[in-house]
Image (cartoon, rainbow, N blue to C red):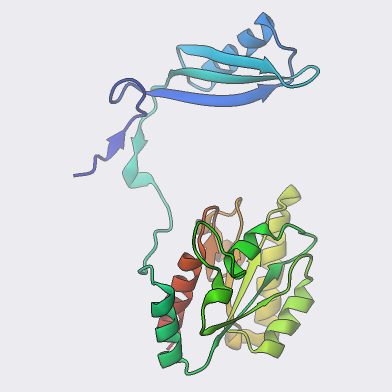
Length: 244
């Protein structure tokens, strides 16, 4: 049985030991170590030990601090989005799409706004894939249109309508001034205005997205860091089943 209340584990179960790293704009030396220890204490780490520090430039020091916290985690209060669908193999995805749609499932993807970071979207869409899994281009019954970087919202809406897309995947890495949030909200609003209930499935992904943000962003699903192509493909099948 899973425990409800847990504490960090270091040397012994429940000892509360944690290790944190951070940088302070302080020249390397005893005063810097003292500043790091003070910060750790204010974070609730007590006693705190500076186990490593070194200069990382003029006037900056990097630290690793080890110590104990009294905080307890209540697992019943943890809110996450858990996968509610099974992970399917490419063959299973292809089989279902072929039998249910009797045509290829069309996916349009890209990085919207000024975001030029295509590593994430390419990892999902390109055949080379990610983490040992082939991307969506590998799936025989999926047709992928990768628009690349810095795609405007009107452009992705227009292309999705032209291609009669079943799903739109957008990746956002740039987060300054909440650009990832604002861009995604703009996109979802544009699709609803242009297509209403006939809009495609909308999926957003990026390392700074919280899967719980889907309602706030106006999209159907949010994927965070570490997502694999197989997870996305399996979700597409799950969503299709829900709509059929």
